[in-house]
Image (cartoon, rainbow, N blue to C red):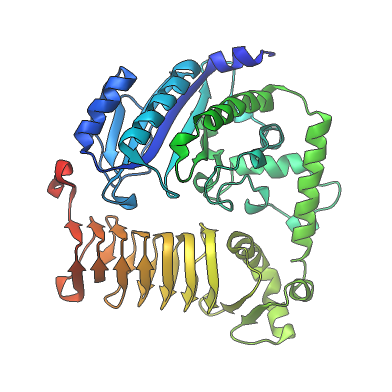
Length: 435
């Protein structure tokens, strides 16, 4: 099925999710957006803490986003044809610039689909998409580790047996069915069966001032997705495949044995049950190397203290600084006396300094937290939080909170000190027009 670029764009359908900040009242912003978009934008039509909602739905909505602060909003726009979608994005960017701003935490997500029933996004070849799209050309994206198409981050069977004959096509396309939380990467392939491809490249401070770059990115994404469904592999694709395969083979060979890995990473002080004995560690290596591989890749480890507790089947870090990390998945880790920023899931943190982070499903003890979001976490009474948010139905929020926001969490007032902090227990307690 061959189509010109213009024909591909005419067939494309785009929906949006915009994060931005404004001191204006939400109802007034909704009226302003309705005027410029010539279509009603409904204010407060969804629960404000649910930032994982599907947003390619009717109608257009504007909601409070308490996770990013008291003045942060989320605007969602439903599927539109390409021309209307681009014009709508330009108008929304204009409103954001007039009445608000964007920071490094803000972004504009978009979902791509095609109206033609013969275009099955589930047939997309991920490696072809990556090679045609060329994500490295976009410099206005968010966290560089988070926002990459990184096939090494996905589960690769028999990675230690990889050779020059390895099927890199299968490696790339495995991300469509991977257990990895792809929702937190630049391109989310997991929802292809639902008929859309989600991309999260547009973001960072003042993204609303970069309309031309955003338009070209969306245009390129549409053409790249279509190309990756129907076109045959070309020479450039083959070169790209081989480059990625060589990178994966080289990287994974480091993990074949402990002695090889240790020789390449001498600055990682690695122990098992606090033992440095090579023979003892080597006995565990075949069992734990997959987990070490995943941890090192996601945390970008070069120098640290790392221990594996065989009784708890848990990894532990101490006295290490982690910047802009992406640690999401099944692994539970203890961080002790560490400094952290980025995305951290399912961890236990003791005496840590946490700044500009999103911590989910964690347990936080005696930590100092700044400018972060703690979702569905247990926070003990010895923690102190500044300019942060604790939310989630299963959260327990104790400690000292200065200029924070606590939403939907259980709080023991005898264990909690609030300074300039707002507490909202349930959705029914929220007066959105006063937040």
